[in-house]
Length: 131
Image 1: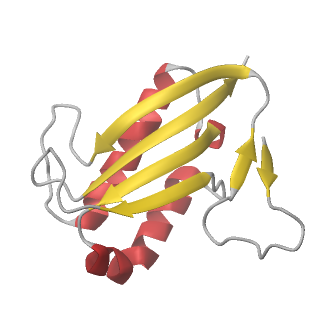
Image 2: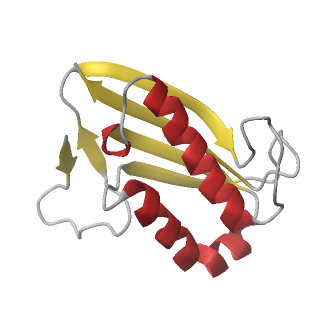
């Protein structure tokens, strides 16, 4: 994969402006919330929900033979902007523990609610697994 950053642009921190991926199997991962494989929320807090949601994304990706570095794009939907900003450092530690230093193209969207209560964050992803 090639990280895309136009000449003269400041380097983004914690994400990529774009990713160019070679041909391979495209994997679309539906929004994953922070619940267990049995669809049970074990916490109502953002940090553990984020960790579980990211683990869920990676579990679905693994079913297609993919690894974290194959993720090209993640969209995050979060219900609590002030809490997100307050715990961003903790989320970064979780990110690095699961994703290493791989930062795909990402968008963060703040929403009023998620379908699955008491979900606070939902992550959807697109990956390209080399053929």
